[in-house]
Image (tube, rainbow, N blue to C red; front, side):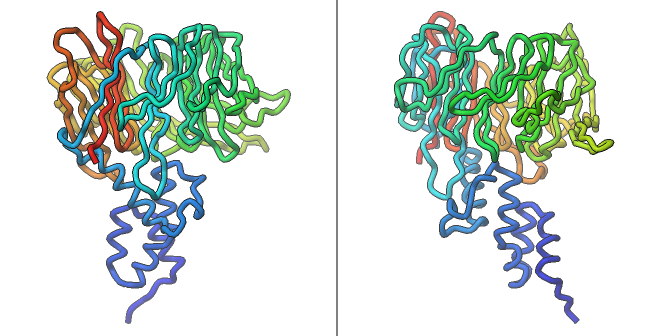
Amino acid sequence: MEIRLPDLALKRIFSFLDLFGLLQVSQVNKHWNRIADSDYLWRSLSLQRWDCSNFTNQHLGTHTWKQFFLHQRRKELQLALAQPHNFVYKVTKNIAFETELAYLSGNRLTVDEQEKSIICSVSPKQELCAWDVQEGTMIWSSPVQEFHFSNLVTLPQMHLAITMDRKKTIKVWNCQDRDALAVLPMPQPCYCMEAYLTKDGPFLMVGDAAGDIYTFTLPGLRDISKVTAFQYGIVLLHCSPDKKWVFACGTYSRTLPQVFLTESLLRPSEGSAPLSTFLPHKLCASACWTPKVKNRITLMSQSSTGKKTEFITFDITTKKTGGQTVIQAYEIASFQVAAHLKCPIWMGASDGYMIVFTSGPYLLLFSITGFLLQRFEDHQAAINNFWVDPCYVLTTSENSVHVYMWEEGGRHPYLRSCCHLENTWHDHTTDSCISSVMCDNASIVLTVTKVSDSSILVMYSLNT
């Protein structure tokens, strides 16, 4: 006698499956196929993978959440499956290298075809510029600024770019109008900024040289809160993927880093400090939240000599104690990098259980407990730049770029080597190096710094 589980029970069981599991159970019979195709399950998968909490049925139109998920996944795979001959590249000169590049377009979540990739950069004249990557053309520039830019971040969901200059002035641009939407002078130089979008709206967080964290609305730069986190300047400020937590680290290496509850910064209570906790590890050189386990953060600490590197992973939670909410940090894993490995400079994380970092010419993937999972040797010289997001890992060496992609669901091989782009654009008559690199699902952009000349911006896009 066949036992038929209720729809609600099946839906609950299927909610624990990843993409491949859900596609497999949909082939068992018509009943399971109907349950496995439900919008509830595919929306849940989409929320786990992308920041699409603001994406509604109105955005979907006539499409289902399953169609939306598979369409986004196909867009991500485009870059991973591409070979060098599938790319076209554009080169433009006279790009300043003091500030990072930043995508203005991002990986927009749509059910339409791939949108244009737009990148922001700074010119030697101190203009903020927006470039159409596919066309290789500048589509907008700000007036020439009196003071050099020192920081650049973007909020692609709002098509906003935010800059800080050496006069300690924050400006918000929509990269369409000539003048800034908002201008705000700061009392101290600011070392780090982070723009993010929550259910309550868009915000900007700024860490300054005095150890204060400021929170402003966007695009108007209305002051929401000011919190003194350290006695020294703040150099790291990272918001968790679900926007629930904010990590802050000061310039003084002996100071313990802190994690704040974002809501307490956005809705400060008069007379009470925002909720926060210290992470009990000093000498923090870098940190990153994990995209899949959204309350998990990994720190990279290094000794003052740079000879000892340790990775420490924490889970952050809230707990009710005596009628009050407190934040607790639990150290769940740690390991030291072997002494024979060259000291890593960059790090990234994937599903909450893996850490990727560079050591000389190698890209290394470790479990959070210190087990070596994969080692890649796709560069002959030392890796001089590194970039990680939830889909891709990029490495550069001398004048080449290598593309990797995370496997779905943390399956083996956990990180897949995809494509190597050689220096077809490189002028061998001058010394140069790649100073920054990043990508979306249809393009790769990099800044090449020349010793005796201005930097150049190289824009790869898929030849569709």
